[in-house]
Structures are given as C-alpha cells and as structure tokens.
Length: 411
Ligand code: MLT
Image (tube, helix red, strand yellow):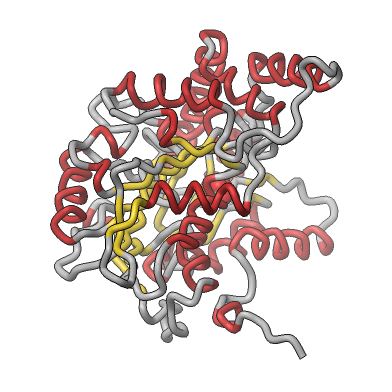
C-alpha cells in the first residue's frame, strides 16, 4: 500500500478558516433565519477596480485574436508587469529591486508555503505567536517540526510571543535562528513595524546568517509616512530578506489571484557541502518546474493597478476599508472593549470580554449577534483570550455588526 506524508497527521484537524466556516454552517442550519455578518476571514467584498476590469476585458479580447493570443506565459510573470512592480513598488521608494528579482504568482499564501521547497530540513525556524497559521502549518507539512505540546505549540519551532505587553512587536531573539517569518502590517494583530525595528531584524539576520521571510501583503494600508512599506527600505535587507506581496487586499484580487515574491539576486544560503548558493536561482528553478505562471488576463488586470486611474481607485478602496476599521475601533472602544490594531491595518485585535476563551467568545458572538470573527487562539497559543475582527466588508454590514455588538456588550 502507498504511504502518506505522516507530517500531515501532526496538523490540527482543520485549517482555521474552513473550521470557522464549518461552525458557522452548523449554526445556520439550526438558525436559518439568522442574518450572519462575516468579519472573520480577511476576504474583500467590494468590486474590482474599474481600471483592472477594463484591462482584463481588453485582455480577453486579445485572447480572441490569433495575432494577440497568448499561450504559456513566462513562469516568472510577464516583463511588463514585473517592470512596473519594480519601478513603482520598490525603486520609487528608494529600494534597489530589479524586475528580474520579482516573481509573479497566484498568491502570497501559496508563496509563503512554497518557499520552503528551496530550504533545507534542519533550519531553526522562528514565528511570532500569534501568527498567520500558514507559516506554521506549511512547516509542519514539510516535516520541520515535531508534535504539539499541551499548549498546541509545535516542538522544533521557536515561538516569539507578542501581546499588549510588547505592543505586539516580538523581541529580537537571543538565540540564533535560521529562518524568521515577519508580517507587517501584521495579520492578525494589526501592529506595524517602524524602520528602526526592521533594522534591528536586518542587523540580527546579517549577524546570524538568517533569512527573513517578510510578508507585506497589507502594506497598502499604511497611511503613516514614517512606516516602511517594504523591508528593502532598510539598508542591507537585500542580503537577508525575501518579501511577499499580494494584489488581494489592495486591489480586491482574493478571487482573481495575483501576487508576487521578491528574491534578491545577491541572497544566498548554504548547501550541505558548505558552498553558498543563490536563492534566486533555486526559486527560479522551482517556479519554472512547478508553476506555469498567472494567466495573461489576470496579469493585465494587475498591471492596471499601476496606471494613474488604477492607483486612484485602489487608494479609494483601501481608504474605504480603513474607514471601516476606524468605525470598528471606535464602536468597540466605546462599548468597553480593549482594542488594538485597525490603524494602518485592516485587522482589529481585541481582548475578549470577561476573560472568555477565544472560541467561547466566537460562539457567544455568533449566537447573540450573528456576527462572525476569528478566535485569536486560532493564530497560536498566545492568541488565546483575543479575537480578530476584519474590516473587509460593506459599510452597511460593518455598521450593522457594530450596532449589534455594542447593544449586546454595553460597557
Ligand atoms: C486572513 O483572514 O487571515 C486572510 O484572509 C487569509 C489569507 O489572506 O490567506
């Protein structure tokens, strides 16, 4: 009989968001009249920007004419998109990133998992706790961890706790780790990183020959000009960091799928014979073998993000969700909740009232207000007693959800 990858048996029963959906579906079966408002998974609700749609429609027309038809595209993404990303997302901010260092993909979630393909089995890996669960689960699947302890922490990972005590900013570890996942603006806490903080990480990584996986999927939500959008705004980061970006949250591409990963050419790691190998070459090889690129139509839609009209429409979209976040913060604060994040970030992180566990609060909120959020414990043991509310929804739903919550949980 064929055998399985036993590492999958170490995983918790279900991935967080499908588990939430399962619980909500069970509730709805028993309460078919309930008007559920979903502020759980960070999935966008507003239509794709007009500039993107127009570009995609035009691209579909291209596909209908032999002279402009496209078959397989470059696995790394079309040059015209990579050039615009390099120029506008990086060079315009003083980051010396070349188009050839950009790999267009179908998602930052996929890339943060897939990147492990090019790393060895014996790296010491650090994650914050709480953390976006994909970083942990993909390491479990790859066999980089042992089993979980009583708290649900995987043996073999280094957990860097974040809480209100350290402003949800992990202390730089004293021990040496090889790979570190950082996410700013942070999912799930909504915390942001200053340049000084990222510099401390870059200094650490360079001193310890570590690689930082920098997830900047939410960078578009930064409105504070002093905050860095990219880790490459920090000198030396090209020697120690891979950055993940996405069109999902800024341009509403969660269902359309387009993202990119930056692997600087000078970034190296060690082979088992001690030689230094360029990670760019390995990632290029990996993508060329396992990936056939994002569709032409979708890449044309992503390219329109960089047009003048696209930039204005994307700003309006991001501003809209940020206003939702502000409403959520204000209403929950006035109802007596201890609230974090929601500024420069689309996630609001709150302390559960009356010391309820995260899942107990999830159930109570669902049953009494029909509002769905995400239990903090789903992001790690240190998320217990916290809860995440997403600002990705219509204004009407956000206002209605806040009305229901404030009525139910008056200060
Ligand atoms: C989240 O809710 O944490 C995100 O939507 C998940 C994702 O982007 O994959």
